Length: 202
Image (cartoon, rainbow, N blue to C red; front, side, top):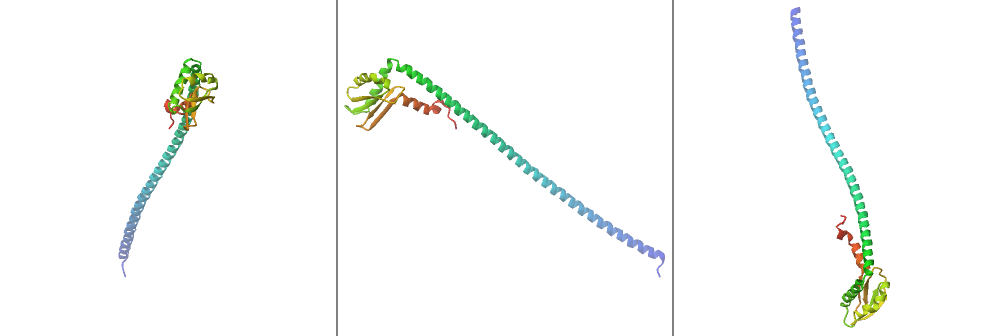
């Protein structure tokens, strides 16, 4: 039979062995927990960084889209204002030219200018050719004077639809129409006002 001292020694060895194994197991668990803790923190940090990056990207896209809409709205507004201003300028210039033409039509030089236009138009006709010449109704009083300035052609004068002067020549023989009315010239200028004035809108 073992002595109590021997039994106590065996018990102490057993307890020490159990304590050492328990300590080692606890240390393993703690090391594993530390590894898992670090992994969890790294995963959480990466997730937060990704979320922050997504948020930043979304916010930048939102701000860019909002600013693009604002810029586009301002550009549209400015284009509209420029269109209105261009139209006002065109109308104002149209009125000024009309007024200058009215003054010119009361000037004796106007008759000479009509003769010049008629000579230019009849240059396109064959010698002795016939044509109808359309004048502003108020200019029909000048028909004989104009006819005398182009004796080599058979010209018939008629009231036209123009209001700003000039003339139109129509040759049915040659299938030709020459428009030298101030109305058409002014309409062409108004139509090209943006190009002429440099106020094109892109």
